[in-house]
Structures are given as C-alpha cells and as structure tokens.
Image (cartoon, rainbow, N blue to C red):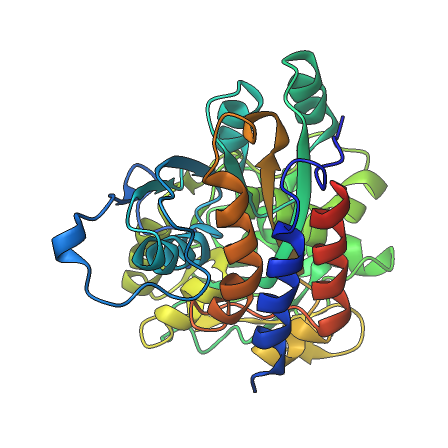
Length: 360
C-alpha cells in the first residue's frame, strides 16, 4: 500500500528536482553487519562549514535508517553531507542486511530501509498489515562480484551452470572444485552451462553472504534461480559453506585461501581488488568482468539495482524525513560514484524523481 505524498510537503519536490538537475548536469554491504554509522546533531559552535543552500532553517530531530549493508555506504555519505547542512538532525545508518532491515521497517521502527533487492511480497504484506505505507526509490546499480584468490590461476571465468555446479543445491558436500565436474557435465549435456569444467583438483573453500542478505538473494536470483527450477530443486544453494553477513569476513577468507570462492557487491570488490580476484561471468555472450561500464550497460550478467524505501507513514511525525529524502535525491545521486557504485542513467533518475513526487 502506498500513499500519494506530494500533498504532505508542498514545494519540496520542486527543490529536489532542482537539486538532481544540478547533479545530472555535472559532469560497500557494510564492513560490519552490527556497526551503525551515526551522524549526531552538531552543536552550533562546532559547525565546520556554512550551511548549504538546501539547508532548512531550524530543522531538527532524528532519522533512523536500517537495511542493506551494500546500500549503507551511499546512505551514510549522504547523511554526513545532509548533517553538515542541517546540524540539528541526528541520523543513524546501520546495515544488518536487507531482510533484517525490512523487518524493522515494516514494524514501524525505521524511517528508511536500504535494500539491495526489491521488497518481497511477504514483506510488503507485513508492512500493509502494520499500516506502514512506503515508496520505493531506485538510487544506484551494483553488480555481484564472484571472487577467488589472486593465487587461483586455474579459474578466470565461469558461466551460470558452473556457478550452480559449485554452490547450487546439488553441490552439497563437494569439498573440492573437481567434485563438481560430474554435475557440470550433466548441466552441459542439458544445455544449462557448466562449460568451464573440468575444474581444478583443489579444495573448494566457500565464504559468502547468508540468507539474511540482499546480496545472497540477488546472487540466487541472477545466477542460480533458473537452473534450480529447471533441475526441480527447492533449496536455493548448498548450505554447507561459511555464511557471513560481514563483507570483511568474506573478503578476508577469500584473500587468505588460494582456492577460495565467494561473492560480494561490486563496491566491496573494488575496495579490496588488491587482495581478491573477480572471476569473469559468462551469461551466454562470452566472459565479462564486473566494471562500472559493464554493470551500467547490463552486459555483466550479475547486475542489480539498489533501492531506498521511505516510510510515508512516518512523514507527518518526522519533519526532517522529507527534506532528507529530497537531499538524497539531489546530493545522493552525485554521491553514488564516490561511494563506489554505478550511477543511474538520466532516464532512470527521472523515474525515481517521479516516483518520489507521486508517492509511487
């Protein structure tokens, strides 16, 4: 359920449109799932810069943001800049995962839910039952980077069948990369991929996001779902791997084991590209490496949009929320690249602005 919001804050949408026009005219999941970035209200004497022109005189209060650790760096950067212009507003940004964020959001506990996937029907139903009305705003693109150690010279590209053979439901119990050779052969015979087998005879050590993570959901949807359904399985992945909501744990484990395997969001790969290697992915048109260009144009098979969900139900009681989202849709779009993500093209920015103006 969604509420038209243009009547709640007359004139705010126009200000946001001016901000995003200026942004367009110019030219990482969080490191710890349990750490919140909090921007406290600043005392007047401690302000380090003159208020920006988009500052709201006398604006005060607090804003609570939870959800995807992938989106958290973008939101945290926007929050820092908003607070510099509006020092009376305290903003808490935490990244326990998309699913956990929606639980809090649909319980009416947060103002904004960061999400690295679209809201599920069951989550939307929970919001509706709790009377939480919302609007979905796409803010950036990201790609799922499939990783191994730089020492793993034997693996440089995998197709979707290869990914299923290594971490899909039927790979349960595989302890070596080569254990997946037989399954890959079956998939290849059925025209489902597995074209990069045989794999090396080396330990397969997997560290990757768990089910609470939007990055897990996105990987399953983009890489495994079609083959899982074709093979008649209900489980999305094998369960016998080290699951972590902490991207630093994933990167550390992958970098420290020469035959490791896992996946994280593109921004976290870029941040750690000196210690991990991205495996190119073949979606049927050849091997493609994750990059800003390949994610933006959709040629990288494991690309995904990133969102914020704004609680329209909390707008009336939180006068800082609307101005913050206006600021997000101006400054936020210019912050996406700085945070390591891929900026939306102009037409999708316009669509996001339209969704915000109309309440979805």
